[in-house]
Image 1 (cartoon, rainbow, N blue to C red):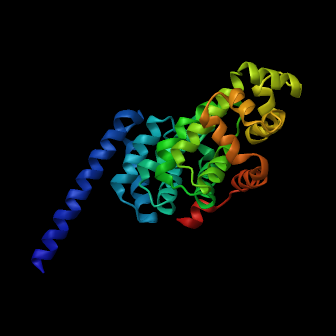
Image 2 (tube, rainbow, N blue to C red; image 1 turned 135 degrees about the vertical axis):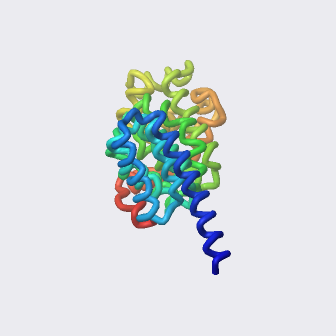
Image 3 (cartoon, helix red, strand yellow; image 1 turned 180 degrees about the horizontal axis):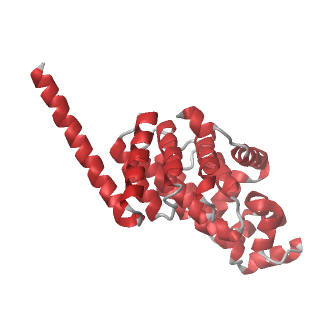
Length: 272
């Protein structure tokens, strides 16, 4: 019995030391008073206790979130959402925090929108063949470019769900989206001729009018079913592959996935 107690004390002490080091790292970037830092420690422990996650992971989530721009006054709520996303998505808090901050920062959203964005991310996992770690590694490939072009987050994620469901790898899906957006924004001569035929000023206007999937559908129709014309317009196999995967007979399913992602609510908490 004495030996068992000794082992427990040693293990608990080691865990506390790891947590303490992680919170000291948080203190280096938080810019708060000692009293406020004590409050952050208690909040990190509270998240660990309430959700049954590792306290050191929670503390590391605080560090990542604050370094990504989440205000210290909102960091506990943010990390709670990230921890739930990690639980539901079978990931670590570091991956889910990275994913959430990338999505929010790419689209200029505030930390208060973390729960809604988290629900959309988890709905993407449910609808497609992907997971939270894969999304965390790959979202940044396209998110900033898509956001700049006016492609909404729900459409970006809905397209990801639709393409990965067909067997496209998560990273490749985002690469294809970026290639398609670039092809629309920086048109080839063939694409410029298509814009003139459609009566639009350019790719940004077409995306604003139709969404990314709808824009690619209009381009496909304007090419009159010619793969050769479509490839010349899009100038990359990645952009062509995305068009083939989400337009034509597959456009309806793509739009349904986008709509489902947009309606996501409560998915993260339920999964957690």
